[in-house]
Length: 203
Image (cartoon, rainbow, N blue to C red; front, top):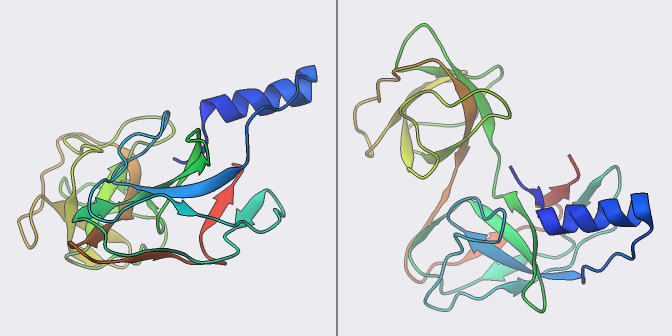
C-alpha cells in the first residue's frame, strides 16, 4: 500500500546493517498511476500532455515527509488516477503513495454491505477501488483492478456497485480490505498534488 520500492528498501538495509554505500539517486519526479505501481512502477497513465513532474519534499520528521510545493499537471488524458510514483531523474522507480485516503472495511451480517470502524467520508456515486488487506482476503468477488461505485452509504457502512447508480454487489464470502476514492480525469483536465497534504511515510 505504498512506500519505497524493493530496491530502495534493500539499499537502505544494506547501508544500515552492512555499511554498503547507499546507491539510489535522489527522487526528483512524480508520476500518476491508475493502479498500484509496485514493484516496478507499472500502471502509469500515458498520452496527451502527461509527463512525470518535478517534486520538492520537505525535511522528514517522525518518519513522514510532505510535498514542499504543489505538483501540477495540465492537459491530461482521460484516466482514473489512484496512485502516484517516485522516480529519479534517470528513470529509476523508487516508491509510491496513494492519492487521497483509504478506509478499512469488513463484511457484515448483510452480504452486500461493508462496514468501517469509523466514519468513512464516502458518499453515493463516488468511484472507488479496493486494496488487499495485510492479512486475510478481500470479500469475494471484489477485485483490485475493477472500479466500483458507492451506493447506499451511511456514516459507517457502504455498498459497492459495478455501474454508477447500479445495484449493490452480492458479497459471496466474508473478508476485509481497504476502499479508496479515485480521481476521474476527463481529456484535457488537470490535477494537483498539494503541498503540505501529500505525504510519504515510513510505515
